[in-house]
Amino acid sequence: MAVRLDFIPMSEQDLDWVVAQEARLHPFPWSRENFLDSLAAGYGGWVMLDAGQPAGYAIVLGVLDEAHLLNISVAQDAQGCGRGSMLLEHLFTRARDNGASQFFLEVRPSNLPARALYQKAGFVEIGRRRGYYPAAEGREDALVMRAAL
Image (cartoon, rainbow, N blue to C red):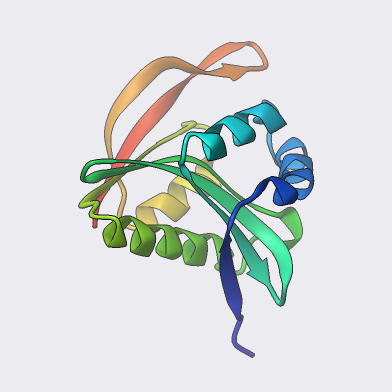
């Protein structure tokens, strides 16, 4: 059976679910205010629906011909079946539609599943930001990745 996913613009009404997922999925989650600020600034916010139920979300900043993935997550019960790839493909399409020719992101070196997803989607490592992320014991670097659209 084929998976049918829909993608809707994120709104303030989605934030109870988004913030709850963020807290479940990340040791250093974004706050409600982080999401509100992103939406107020006009960043692209998306909620992925699976059979009408929220299953993932993303925030993307677009500047000129670049898109920058700031946050992407798939609910735990929806992971492992290609939904992350489908969400990324939606983000790529939207970025292209908005004139982007390249897509950037940062990822923790320790986040092996995310790194595998990004590499599969065509991202390549182009740099490293030292001490970018908070970590249980200090700070963790970020790998900077880029994909051509």
